[in-house]
Image 1 (cartoon, rainbow, N blue to C red):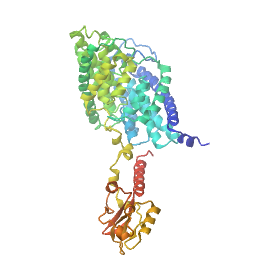
Image 2: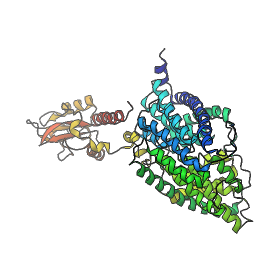
Image 3: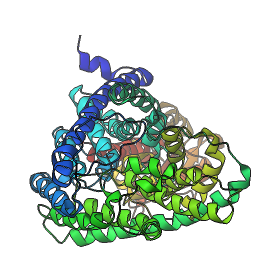
Image 4: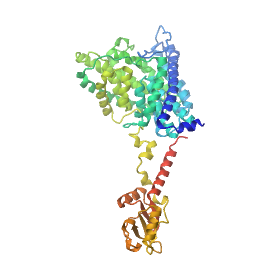
Length: 581
């Protein structure tokens, strides 16, 4: 029994179930290690140097390290710079692991690129250093890339088809994000939604459901199964819907700022060698963190603090009103500098923090203006998060489900949906993921499926022509009908003694002799015509073949079967060119 052959021949659902199980187990173990290593580096670098212990979210269990007695925020540039220096050394030799990792994985999916297995441990270590030194980044991007690499490597090891290897990348992307956010449903949907601006990849959803749930079960065993950001229990009030709509508009505008500044800073740092750019980015981000310590690390704990409106827990020395106004922009700049310089970390999770800070500001404002309608800021913090993620990453459905899962805020969904729709609309074309196809027909992997102009690129002369199926003017109609029956044709070209094309005879117009049945002026094509043109003529003439004539001479008969054969050959070439080595 050949195991690899047996797996390849399994039906779709059985094969997808196996893929989901294997990717889920591998991802769950790897991301658990990533989480623990990040905690270790946080204590060894950030806390040891600065004495700062970032707050942790309500639903996440972490390693309990001893808390230092004093904090030294002035040393934050040293901590972040040291982390950037260490990561830069890794990037000098392995540049593919720079930045978020999500965009690289998505690009690999669309271009059928092989993800080398060693990228997973390298991405894990580099990202743990970036986050552990206090870099303003998320763990979702690295988790997505780690899982995508593992999925691609596992299916390659099992000898699965190129299509399954490519699908494993998308499965891994959603699985990694779903695991680290403890949101398996959103992770499964995200696998299919994050690949396009305005489309889904339906074949990805089933195996992603399996992998996300399995990975979540493993990860939750070590970090707990509670919602990442605790449980939201405030009743829904429809009176606040117009206010939530306004949040969506404002957050949509803010997400444009995030995308544009990130792209600008990333372009600026591209002038600096990758081996040292994370160091400079870290030092500059550390400078911002001196005034705004709330921007360091993943920042999930600050979301809970904002939701509970425990403003006294903010540690910045900046006056509170100024802090609240500037904090979203400070987080944007710190993240841009950390990740835009090449630091290994996600950019979606910081978006949740930015959105929560902005939502906090808006909620406090409404609370002061209309306290009877807005007695709490928590719903505005949550809606700020989900709106910002939808606007900056273009995943409206996944954003709604993800934030609902991590906050247990099902009752807030009507407001969330309105705000997300408006944020998505306002933010327009701006997305943190560059070069994202609009839909499946715009993706290289679906070119053969959706590329109807392929017929326009193929010339008739490159098709196999039937140069035996013709009759002469002097032949009998019995011979013509016999040839039609033998070759399953409805018509035949007619030539004279010098092979000059004369016309066509049709089986439906039998009149006793070829000369009497001859139809002149019938449609013909030349060898330089396209298959698209040939197909149009066949449709109009209700025929399955058409004579090919060059300089008045009959070159042969182009049949529908020969057209289809050539089309499939060219389609296979496109597919093979896009296959992973």
